[in-house]
Image (tube, rainbow, N blue to C red):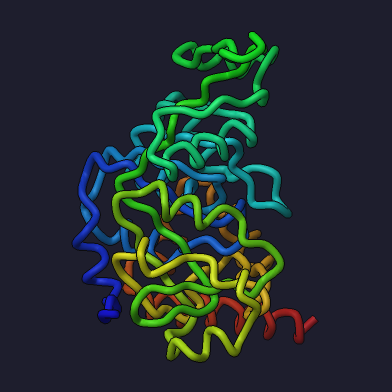
Amino acid sequence: MGDKSMSLEEFAGTIESGMTIGIGGWGARRKPMALVREILRGDARDLTVVTLGGPDVGLLCAAGRVRKLVYAFVSLDSIALDPHFRAARERGEIETAEYDEGMFVTGLRAAAARLSFLPTRAGLGSDVLTMNPDLVTIASPYDGEEYVAMKALRLDVALVHVNRADAAGNAQYLGPDPYFDDLYAMAAERCYVSTEQIVAPEELAAGGPAQSLLISRLFTDGVIEVPGGAHSTSCEPDYARDEAFQAHYASAARDAGSWEEFRRRFLDGGEREYHEAVAEFHAARDEKEDGR
C-alpha cells in the first residue's frame, strides 16, 4: 500500500504561499493544530483558508498569513469568538466569504464530487446572498423551484487530525463526531493527516466500527504522527479541550504585549518545545492553586 508517513518538517515543505488550504475539525474540536503551528514556523503567506474555524484561524490571522477566509463561523466553543479573528475582521485585514453552514458543507460536497456547484435551499432569502454577490440562484429544470447554486470550495491542500491512522493513510476517528473531515480530504488536490498514533492496518479494524474509518488512503498524501497534535482543541476520547490554556490564549490575544510573550513562550520553538511549555504552564497554574 505504500508508506506515506512523514515528519512535521517534511510536511511544512509542501505548503506554499498563495495556496487554498482547508482545515478540518469544528471550532475548537479536533483541529490539526500541530500542522497549523508548523505552517507558522514556515514562510507560506497569502493563504486562502477554508474552515469551520477555531484557534487555527486565530493563530494564522495573528501571524499575518491569511489573505482570505472562507468560513461559516469562527469560535472557540466555550469562548464565543476567537479574538485574533475578530480583530482581523474588524480591521479589514483579511478578505472574507461567510456562508451559512449548510451552504459551506454543500460547497465542500461539490468540490469532493468534482462538480463546479451543487444546488441547495440553504441561504435562500437571507443576507448571505447579499454579502456574497458572486453567488447566484438557479431554477430547477424539472419544476422551476429556485435554489442557491453553491459553488465548489476547491482546495489545494486539506489538513485533518484523527485519533489513529495507518502508514498508508487510512484514518480513523474515535470521538463522537466525524465533522466533515472526509469532505475536506476529497475536496483537495492533496490531503495531510496528522494523528495521535500510527498503527498497523489490522488495529484500525479491531479498534472501532467500520464507519469510524473516515478517510481512505486513496485521498491521503501524507501521515504525520503527532501525539497531542490537536491541542489545545479536543481530540475525544484521547483528551478534552484544554480550557485553561484556551482561556490563557484568548486573554493574551487581547493585548499586544501579552501576545508577544505568549508567542515567544509557546510558538517560537518546535512542537516538542510547545508541549513542554504547555506542561510548564499547567504546573505553574496547579502550584498557584495549591498555594491558595
